[in-house]
Image (tube, rainbow, N blue to C red; front, side, top):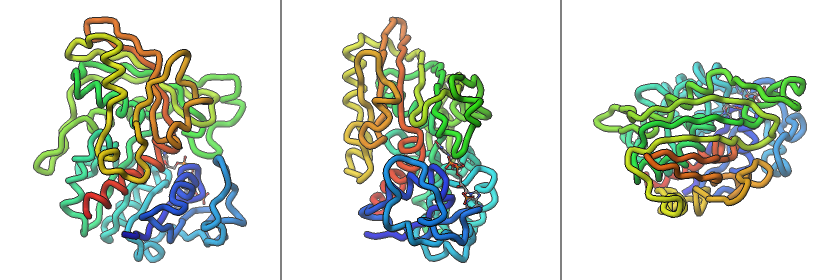
Length: 343
Ligand SMILES: NC(=O)c1ccc[n+]([C@@H]2O[C@H](COP(=O)([O-])OP(=O)(O)OC[C@H]3O[C@@H](n4cnc5c(N)ncnc54)[C@H](OP(=O)(O)O)[C@@H]3O)[C@@H](O)[C@H]2O)c1
């Protein structure tokens, strides 16, 4: 099967990762790229390439379209990398016209009819949109730090249950988009606050681990407390975690085995962008952004510094690529799952 797709906000950081990951994709062909300041311009001439590698050939000659229904009506699926404020108006309108939108923006993540998906964790929630596929819908990709955290928590949750999770993030500057924070703010410095980030981690995680039944999403009941920091790193978010499981964890070896053996529907279905192993357990003073941000092309999460304290307490440092796994790659994986599930 081949589907025509559009990328909204294709000149931004997440938009560029979409463009890169969809180069020669087996299912999705990029037919439309939209922008705001770049609208009406030729992508290869006017858009500055800001991520790793080169601008793919296929996009160089494309004219960037304004984000309007008339330019989008013929595509099968829309990938949105719009800023949240823009997404609020535009995405809802597109759905009202019967379009299918998978978005990175935070605007609709907690809406009662929007599935918030990490395919290895809660692909079953996509039932909500499979039921009304022809009518148009929004599926949301969660916050980047939340995706990385959820992948780590999933095998632990399934095996032991969770009572509470405390997470302190150290987030890359690319997480704020381009140009993001001024260099005077971030170089040689740490910013101990990222607007709305802590609430996203605390709320979204519970929706992801909750249930979808009879048309209703119900939150999971464990506690999540988050503190978010911006650090002078370009790619990859690191998270320092202390958590308590409901059932005692036997020992470190058992925990490592459970993390290493973790697979979900994307691996079982052999989806194109799925990492072979969603979790990599790393030894020594790892994970580190410099070494671990691009494991399995940025789709795998690295877990290190694991400690088992007894009485259900565990600590770890985890790391994942905010632009790939936390944004465009996660969104493409949702689309691959949906396409395969629909046959
Ligand atoms: N960066 C991350 O790690 C990350 C992770 C997860 C989720 N997200 C979310 O993903 C979205 C994009 O983030 P980003 O980091 O790529 O931001 P960014 O680098 O600031 O890019 C945003 C892009 O949106 C475009 N835009 C603004 N208004 C538009 C409109 N009306 N129509 C079409 N395009 C429009 C701009 O296009 P022009 O250049 O043409 O003006 C700009 O290039 C945000 O909602 C963000 O919260 C980001």
